[in-house]
Length: 385
Image (cartoon, rainbow, N blue to C red):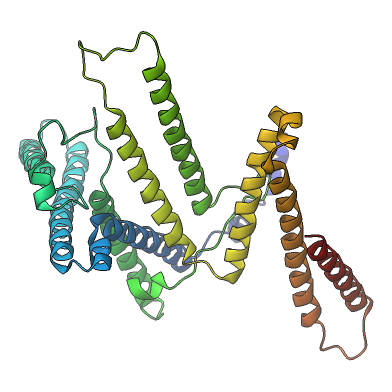
């Protein structure tokens, strides 16, 4: 590209014109209010989802269903205790990070540096003690009695750095939400808009987003679907490996080195992950509107169809003799029928939008004809199913 031509194309003798030309290039910049509101809505959705998972994992709802009010109250108290400790840890972590940034901005020989370093060390020690206190509390969903009778070996802890717990996620997401809503409220006050709250923002329905080029981007639920599929596959593999290991001729219990993690412990961990993922998916599905639910149903059917097709491609002759061949054929019919129904609905909406015209236009006649064809196709597919 000729840089001189590009430079000459901008009239630098007219600063106002040049500013307009440069500002008009690329994607239009999002208004501060819209950006702040979008950020706050995302934060609220994350917090509410984590809150739902936290309550479900605490076991208090299950205890309520069983009618054990005493156990429900105990599990709720234990969960809240863990959450309060997690909030303190998160608050100190944020303050510690802010202090680190202040320290980075100072010169190494500044008298204030030693004071800040001392503060950082104290906060590190406090959080260390809080984490130790948290590790002594019963895990989510476990009563004091159940926790008390476990031996040190049974109180299994992951090797290495532990995963972020649900209470830690909820504490972090709550802080992010408070900050995002506070920033939004400042802009709303400046522009004279109605002040948003966490409750008002939580009523906004999430949209299923897809990419515009290439393979569609997975939405939030789609990503959770993928994680759930991987977890379920790991559970199946774990069962298979356990059977093979026990059937091996040279099978023997390991006596030296690090004690292997028991099959039951691995299985319990994976099953807990699966329950968490299923709960999160259901929580997000409950926020979908009618159009989103139809898209979700179609997506699940296509996922199931893909699995059957993979199985068929491995051994077509063997697959043709199984029940899955019939299931795949039924799925193809259902997917085609649902896609046709969606197309007919969309065309119906467009036809309704121009129905106020007294004299039929070519566009209206074309839409009506196409809708009639799609409805006939749908009826024939339903008859075949």
